[in-house]
Image (tube, rainbow, N blue to C red; front, side, top):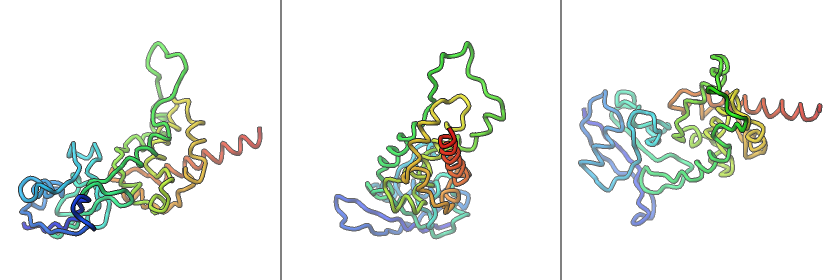
Length: 237
């Protein structure tokens, strides 16, 4: 079948403004959008720029807007989007070239929530064990691949560059509720301001955009609840 791709192009070295270019590609309905983009890059227009790596929905590098929705190109089948495919870079990030965006701010917010295990206690003779119940407490947020789809679907993140965004809060959640971690108080302190968890307006765009099916808004609500409970404990002490 012939699939027409309408791709938003922008090369800051030669273009004054972004524009759309059309490409016709022969594909099967079971092919992925990424297969079509690769065909364009490899055989039609070598100047076309996109970012992709594992091509199996694990690295998160090929997140983009496909027919107006944030998706992973490697996980989106042609049969699910039709014969006319409009492709744009993620919104809310500066465009480096074509579909490649500058994610430095995104990863700076990610690093700000201390996304690693913190535990200065003497190590046990064996690994730090968890019960299935303890592991299940944060299992959902371990699935995040840092693709940016949730954050770039968030109106709060569009409006305020200082807002850490859903992905960073998801990463914080993963460690806040890890029974082996001892850094929850510091993470919660970093998320307690208007640029932290309270920047979320509970719009649910993030949950709908997540290609891994993470209940992002629920995770943010649990972090907010921990912030409230912490404040209540401080007032009562």
